[in-house]
Image 1 (cartoon, rainbow, N blue to C red):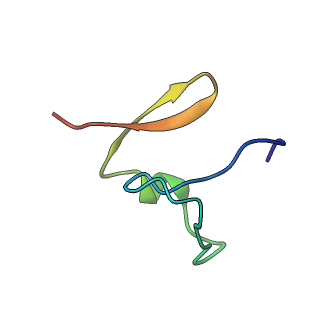
Image 2: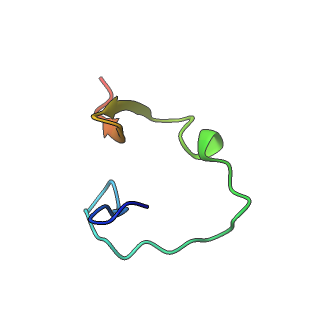
Image 3: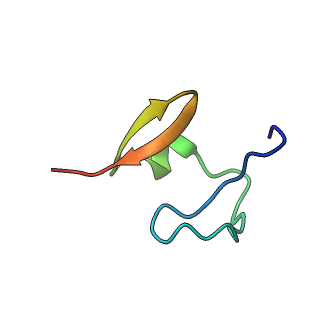
Length: 48
């Protein structure tokens, strides 16, 4: 990752995110939520 960037929890914003399994597929994790790209970063958007 680039300097100054970090991964955080989409629910609470906590920066302490632990990697569970390196073989997890991002597309599978994101299939039930709506996401959009904002200035190059992927953000979760609220479902309606």
